[in-house]
Image (cartoon, rainbow, N blue to C red; front, side, top):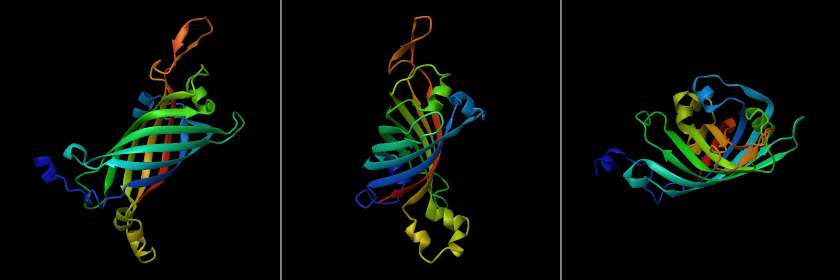
Length: 219
């Protein structure tokens, strides 16, 4: 009960946006998660990714916490380059969004965790680099960490509202700037194995890490 009094949702649930669309431009990395955490990040050249996500909020303020649950579908294009043809990736997944922070009066923020599946029409070249060209699988686990900041608040905070056309911040009230880490991996053999050069079965582990910047609109 105390939590419900402490956290104040931005909208009553019946008035809150129920859908969102997110577009992203991303860069593939050959670094592991542990290397990324320590700041050792290597970007695979010519390995950009374009993603479009459509999501629906299933529940606001889950368990009385400032926690929203959404069901998402994503399609990504890994464009053709000298190492691969066009590769399409599909992701059905769920996402939890934490929506309350002490600085929300100045800059509304969301931190989100996602989990689901990733199916690729072929193995992206950057994923092969990350796995030292060991065999992978088209169907793998998908996880995501995302941070989003409200664009209307960002305009006010940076004084951009002074130079933008009248009404622009109001139009951006349900728009968010996003940064995310996408992780596609085998779950240490959960999604299958491969036979190495000695004939031994090895679990498919590791995978592809992708950094993205995007814009999300809620409606």
